[in-house]
Length: 57
Image (cartoon, rainbow, N blue to C red; front, top):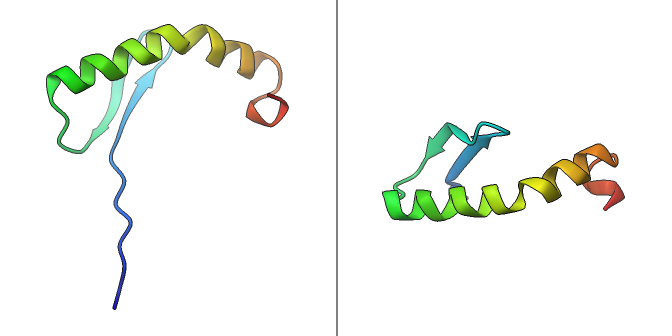
C-alpha cells in the first residue's frame, strides 16, 4: 500500500505580499486570512532573516 502526503500552499512574496504560488482549493476568505497572518508576521520574518535564519531563533 502506497501512502501519499499531499501538501497545499500559498506562498507570498515579501515585502509586496503578492501571491507567487497557490496550490490547493483555498477560498478567497482563506487567502485573505493567510495574507493577514503574513502581513502581521512580516516584521518577525525579517528579524529572523536578519539574524541568521530560523536556526538562530
